[in-house]
Amino acid sequence: MPEAALLIGATNGYIEQQMRDGTLAYRMVGGTRVIAVEDLKAHFDSIPKEIGKRREPVAATEARRAA
Image (cartoon, rainbow, N blue to C red; front, side):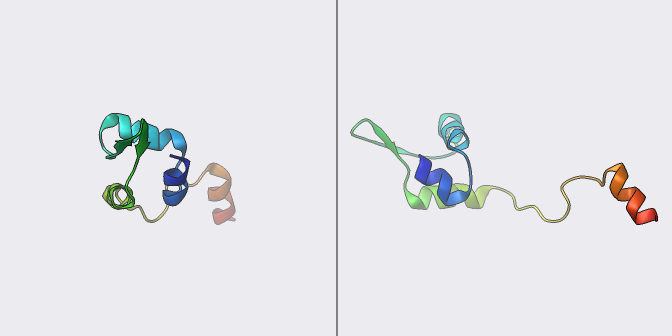
């Protein structure tokens, strides 16, 4: 799982949770969960893209802009 997390820039915990939630497919190979690269890419592509600012400016930023 660390490799899967690294590939999409996520944490191991995120990958684990997605598998448990059933949103990320995996296969059992000798008692080990294995995620196919195609499945990981499909999962990543299903995450909505975001653009622009993530939050409103804080007071200090607004004060600098006003000055």
